[in-house]
Length: 115
Length: 115
Image (cartoon, rainbow over all chains, first blue to last red; front, side):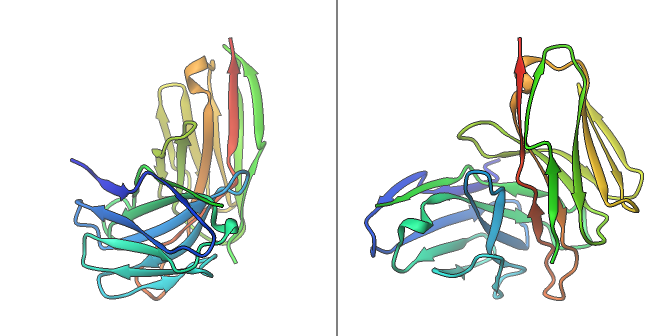
């Protein structure tokens, strides 16, 4: 039972380069999320997808785009990386609202450094 | 805007002692989560609190929720070194109209248990 799988685990980019962070879940969850974690800031929501075919902005969406490819996969793209995007990125998924325990499952994270 | 405040942000305690971490939030919610994070690792779900007065215990940790006071506590009993980690509370934003719950995190409490 893999849960939420993120790739890559580590990445170094030069300013201005682009890249896509991949996330896949095998729990048949409807909702998926991208968070970034910075020291002393907790986790902040970048984008989320309530269900397949929908995406919405979170608290800190600037500089990012997302794609909900299918029910399992939710990718995060940095079109032109900036040093301020150096962070640890976590993907998460959850059941549809109003069902189950509403728990969230997190991936192992991607450590991104932009130089 | 939902705000989640944890205190203390740093906690150093001796083995065998008891202590409480507090989590206050600014708007009505009846879903609160506690997570543990070890350095360089992902978030591990500890407790899901889904109603006023909910109390859950696992080993030396006990979490409670008072939705009227908008307060959750994480109580540590007879701390041991293995409990050293960062603990986050997170509050569900609730149904947003887009069909998805969203988590807002506190900044975390870094706990160090000294032998």
